[in-house]
Length: 194
Image (cartoon, rainbow, N blue to C red; front, side):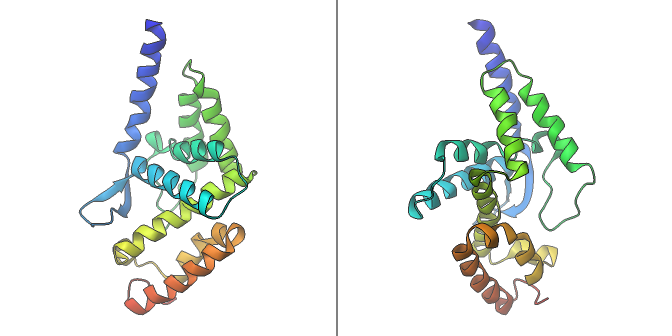
């Protein structure tokens, strides 16, 4: 049993490093930038709230686990900002990290890799809702910070709408609400009107 606990402790120490991955987005009081673990927690709580509020017909447990682990790949690769350049080897580098974590001799390890691959493939309703929340939650945080992240990166209306396409496809009511807010953000000077 001591050996099992040692492996578990090593795994939990490894995944704790997600707290060290800095993102471009600020926390709502603009005092600092958020980390990827905070983003995953916020996304999970948002998913829980939306699933209950909209009576989503999803496997909520599966979706929540997927939400919690969707960015564990960033432990080795760092965050790739939605409005920044993409790495040409991004998927392969992220997959290597997930495979490394899945190699731990733990019961959770194989499902971690399976759920991450399912999220990346976007083949299930759960993976699509996690992606919707992965677009919605940073949007909401940007609203709360008066678009500081968008302004720093000179983000345009069209960029926000392009990144929000998973929301348009799978949650049109939420997308309609977002489009209204985007218009307000352009008027406020938080987004470029392009």
